[in-house]
Image (cartoon, rainbow, N blue to C red; front, side, top):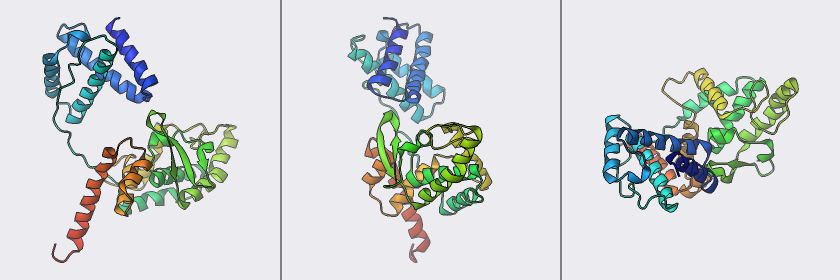
Length: 300
């Protein structure tokens, strides 16, 4: 089998057996293509001819190209998985990435919005009751009130919302489903949006579909569209520091932990596969506690 065919087969494996999203599979594919480019430069045409020395040389070139440690770690992980697949399929006898180590990842604390910044954002989306403002209100209440990802928000259908129990069915990474609860603020925002926002635009453009969030033509709002709406909201709030929409998810988790929620509950709400992904927020809450202590204790 040709090398390109093995790559194609690996992509099928990721999507079908591992149930990875298209975006995740594409990231793996790009990492493999980058490695193939390196192999071509070394006059190596077959994956099975790669050994530990070639792998070390590849890591050296990544360092020379000034890739961040997180990017190098991701590439190693992608290629280790790819070679594991080749071993499993008996295309090669051993995995040259098995014992490859790399520099420990930098600990980057998730950035979040402060209370006054959240208040500024909410003032923007509560400024009037125009259809698109009502939609933006739902976007903000939804992302901050549930902690779901922007990509997950774009996939929410009306049929996923259980108003009786105030919970939403969310399809997360790998098509894993989870229910997340929501509170009265989002409930009120949804009621007004469905009555005076979504229905008005749907009737105007004669569009009928089940997606919750819509654009100004009443078509389903994409994840990119949601990010655009949030960016515009952030600009109108006149927030000065560099911020991005994913910070709402970080703020959701940080606020829960700062107010006494347990780690397992936050993990389940965020849809993290492992607790280690959620534990990064403990560093944020520790910084919050330290800051509060230094500010208020007379002997700090």
